[in-house]
Length: 190
Image (cartoon, rainbow, N blue to C red):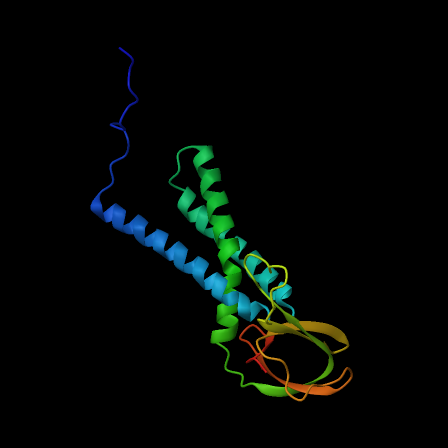
């Protein structure tokens, strides 16, 4: 007779409390991913997002290392410690930019102020998940707005074109807010 595969009789059996904990952690992870996706619109209207995201990731990695140090004290083998360190550092470094951006924006007590910028151009874009069919009329989903800020060309995404059809070199005014961490963004879509 051919032996059949084991049905998992020696697998770990979880308590109902453990199912609830791990299920809750799974839902939390899914919620964080959804928040990240929703925050992309804000990233597209932030000045120097790389500075904020990089600093947040570094702080997250350091906090992850501290958390891993605390959690790895009970580990018996070196491989367990390494796994704990890699998991904690990677997870914290990945999700720290989200928390940095949310806290910068939501915990800001600075009001929006109209700032002048030198208009360069605006270009429509279409975001189609499966591309555009040949001969299909393409409707703009939004606009890239290019302007000079402190001598540097900036680009943000907006839903609607600027009113008045500005020309290159015209002065435009956009509502800018300073966040909790000092990173500025265009407050609402102009």
